[in-house]
Image (cartoon, rainbow, N blue to C red; front, side, top):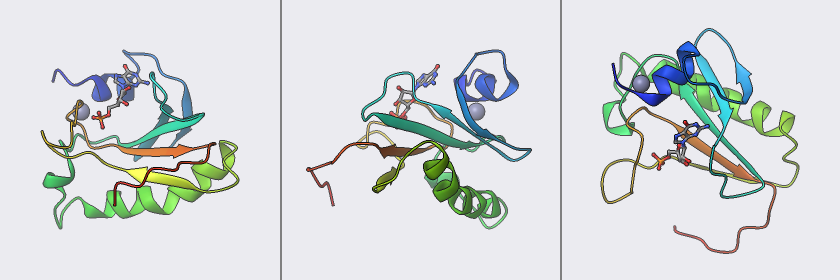
Length: 112
Ligand code: 5GP
Ligand code: ZN
């Protein structure tokens, strides 16, 4: 499959890893929007939030269980945002489910 995040998962595209286990991978975004910008993905290919189902949502809750630990271990001490862009209007650019962890700076703008 021609998916860059599947290639990052299998190691054929290198990444700077923040956390990894058998189910999920967290790695630093190549184009950081905040001082700490990490992407957390399931190792299994899920295209976006639109494709979360009863069958795969255990991985998603597992990701959210790990996010506070990943944020803390990456040096985020004063809060962070978790964002997932889904579909065209949200400007999703990689069609493999990912959650952005954004931290390390005071974010003034609020989208919602
Ligand atoms: P999206 O726009 O789909 O919400 O987020 C995709 C993110 O993946 C972007 O922030 C982009 O910088 C990041 N990205 C795209 N290609 C690569 C890559 O090859 N390596 C890493 N580490 N990040 C990538
Ligand atoms: Zn993929």
